[in-house]
Length: 509
Ligand code: MSP
Image (cartoon, rainbow, N blue to C red; front, side, top):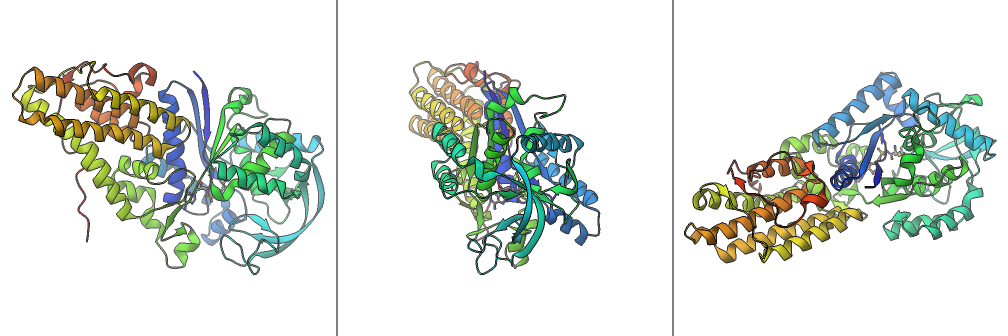
């Protein structure tokens, strides 16, 4: 069995979590669950990014110290992830002592390797991005992402010699074709490097809310510089509990497309400068858009959608945990943008969940109840559904392996569709009780058993429930995928009808 170290970006605590944050986290969670299912040793890391000007400003506006504010907001992220059934193994906060220790060790290594020097920085800064822009990159002096005026900044800072890594990075990309996926995003990062890299300022003396620079106490590290190192903190870099060698070769960063430059240019260069290999893989995803716009606090302030209306906890209360997880994984191809809407969730819910999956489980339970005395029969080895099941198993597994949840769910739903058609064709509800109906129901139950295994990374709660309803004990994750995702293993069992799994939602119009 392999190892799998998956990370989400760590979220800024300037505001409460919204569904855009949930998009990253649910996708990472499903990947972590998939890898646990196939028996990998998994470490799933998420957390909060608590330093920087933006967070310090938010604290001040709310009349709290930065620490009080970050304690409060970081807890809201945990609550949201609990509500969404996120199975993280570690939740990192960048204000923790372990992070300070790893950051200081990591940056001291870069300093001692000669890649950090002092200079004066003059430039345009966007507090919302926590990033500098050149005049050319700005739009009439405004931030190209937030549209807000950029501030002129001039400071004596410590710089990272990023320019020294141009060739090394290009060579790394050439030698590791799968380093950044999808390919379009890899090309974006590659062209950025090819366009020439400038050294970057990595410390601030104008603010104190950050990790102190060990060799110059007047400075703290620039928030992005400490934030990226969280991926190392969690595996004990520079500390007694160091597990870097165990996990780093198996690292996968899942990130939104707006932070490609940090993760695909700066971060691999920082790793090289510290004498380490870059992460093994960065998977980029697109944005969830509302009315064509990225969700953001700025957008809400300008009268757009209220972020509080699409807080993860509000959505899970309205639609249920598994339907929201399903929607976030199924709606858009990972890597592309997707449009988020309540109508979109309702449509997916009614079609894929209520009509297809829910209906399949309900009709099978009904027929087993009326024609098989509630006892689920065993499947046939030569069922025509077997081919469909084996295709779904193969395609679903391959899609999860290549970070494509949308295709994985499509392949799984292919088996649900095939099973519904099989039942419609044979109409077991019209048959007399006996071997013929037993055979059909055994096949259908086996297909359902396999669906619950294939869909458990996306909808763990519902899959456990179905597993029980068809008379199985424990959970689909109790055995490894390779041992149980095989046609013919359904041992039979008592089948329970239960309440509808996904009561249809009436559309408002
Ligand atoms: N703190 C930095 C990341 C540091 S990682 C070392 C940051 N934080 S963030 O809170 O602004 O955004 C984090 C991530 O949230 C984004 O990369 C993206 O993955 C996700 N999203 C935020 N809004 C989103 C959408 N509207 N749609 C999809 N994902 C979005 O950047």
